[in-house]
Amino acid sequence: MPESQEPTQSRPPLAANGSDAAGEETAAESAEQGRMNADEESIRSPEIENPIVAAEGLTKRFPTGDEELEVLSSLSMRVERGEVVAVVGKSGTGKSTLLHLLGALDRPTEGTVRFRGEDLFEKDDEALAAFRNREVGFVFQFHHLLPEFTALENAAMPALIQQQSLAEAKPRAMELLEALGIAARSEHQPAALSGGEKQRVAVARALMNSPALVLADEPTGNLDTKTAGALHDRMLRLSRERGQTFVLVTHNLTLAGRADRTLYLREGRLYDEAAERGEGRGSQV
Ligand SMILES: Nc1ncnc2c1ncn2[C@@H]1O[C@H](COP(=O)(O)OP(=O)(O)OP(=O)(O)O)[C@@H](O)[C@H]1O
Ligand SMILES: [Mg+2]
Image 1 (tube, rainbow, N blue to C red):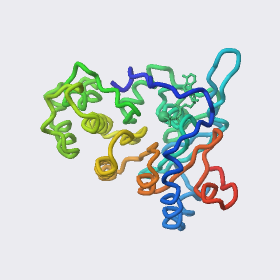
Image 2: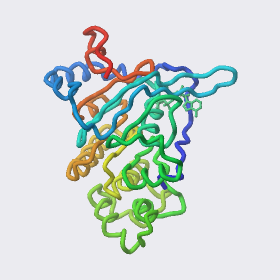
Image 3: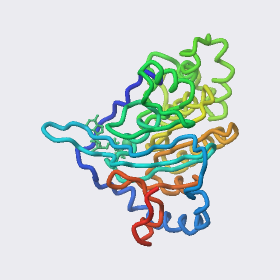
Image 4: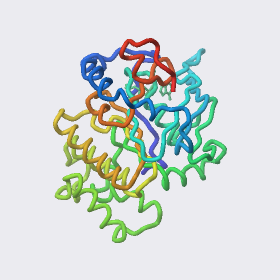
């Protein structure tokens, strides 16, 4: 369930910039997408007002023995209401760390995250848990379904946490499972679901409470290209129908290209595409 699910995941070695082949494989697609998005400067305009999420000076250091590993370094980011932003970057650069901070699953070492102008980390842990349940839908990198609950119950969990009964929550949960093509699996427990089916249940759960902000961490990471594309499209369609804001981490640059904007996480900061296309360093966003 969102507020108790810690973002436990197997960690890559502690290198701030590990190597990852997936990024290179699709560089050509990235360049193509860059050309297609050449007119998107307006979206990145610094005049953007009232972002739904705004990070400023966001720094995250993890203690590692005697030293500290700085993963995010005074990063800034603004996401507009209804925008779909893809975050890409090599393995170990801090993409999951960033999503966890944007969704207040973890606290930064320094800096702020404002949600509709409100400084999240001024809240205590209880208020943050309520905020997450109400406003944020997470699709975790490793789905984190609860093994003892069925697909339907897992999907309905954010509503159950809000004290809805399963009978009350069921229609919306079934609607989402249907839209994601897994209604027939609603009574299965996660162990009896395929990887792609589990990912789809995790997406249904993230959308259950119609949160304003959906944070998806490689939601299609372990799926074949076709299944990944289909899930990605369904997820975005469902989300756009409700005007939700979406921050999506992906290694798949083709899928990233379907977002309104693609940001590259490198050396603790976010950059726009120009840097990746070899047109100078690009601007930090
Ligand atoms: N709780 C933690 N304690 C110590 N180090 C951590 C912790 N969480 C993350 N790290 C380190 O921070 C760095 C960034 O991790 P993160 O999981 O954010 O990377 P990522 O970009 O999501 O990688 P991937 O693409 O492999 O999922 C890694 O080097 C990781 O080992
Ligand atoms: Mg990650």
